[in-house]
Image 1 (cartoon, rainbow, N blue to C red):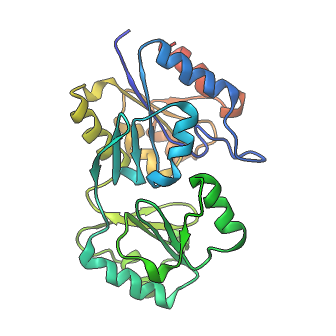
Image 2: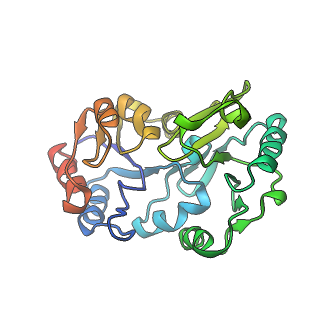
Length: 259
């Protein structure tokens, strides 16, 4: 079979969060077999790169589309980065003064938040492998900015998260709203990655579960939604696999003839 590039979302796709964060054994097996059959497993995640590296290392994957397409790595080397537009960062910082407990941002190495202590800091520190939290007043540039309010509760007082200026795109997740450079998304990141390799987009397969996966599920050949995805996400996919804790990813790779 022709070499395929398989891009996996991390949370609730590669990594299960049932009871505790863990990687299902059959998912590990699927990635090993994909490599053994000459395919290229890769990651496409909303996590910033510093929150991705440890998971990628567990799978021995070094091809990454991180921060919803704002950071891209080919064979472990960064080939692309888009920061939040500098001319609009001050608007975010002004909003952060009004909503200090509801705003956060990331750059290449740190999460900037006013909730760095306790379980919040420990959770992200465990993902990064070091104390990765800093106070928001130390932020100088960002890859992504967040408002911890579900999209349905947004109003004019939430500034750029309600009415994004030119150059800024919003990603509406279930529990928060994300702002980043408007020329970024997981699928755009995959396009840049594939252009760099010289391979065809027709050779891309994607796996995901969240709203930020919809575009890459629609455009891949095919896109695979995992069982726990919402109906809207499943509608965007060409295939739906079983529960990831019950070997769904392994089974999907087998049914696609990849392994």
